Length: 159
Image (cartoon, rainbow, N blue to C red):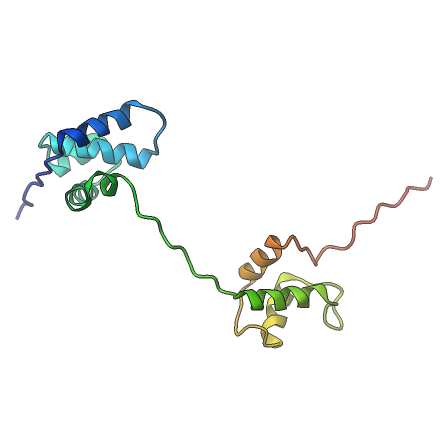
């Protein structure tokens, strides 16, 4: 059973905006492809034909662009919504406790802190329930801390 062709009536004002967007300035590739797909759909071209002519989009992607235009207008069809991103794993108090631990001396038998050692000690000392190495690395990087480095001292060469 073939899909029913998608009819996308793009208003004249929106078509004018699409042509202006395509003719002026630098735009992200995704936005340009979506604009071209909308213009093709406005001409009555089917989704598979639009996908074949643009080569970077699938028929399903073209249909999604058309449906987004019908439901939310031009802005919704061309641009993506802002994504929230992942929630912070450590609270401010947890970060402060870990930084304070790193600024102190390393455990007995260790010459310096390493990222793995910091992660293990933070859990062992019950500063945080669990924490990964990457989280610790980013935390140290944001505070410009490098506890694994020895102090760089410049010695004068003797001949």
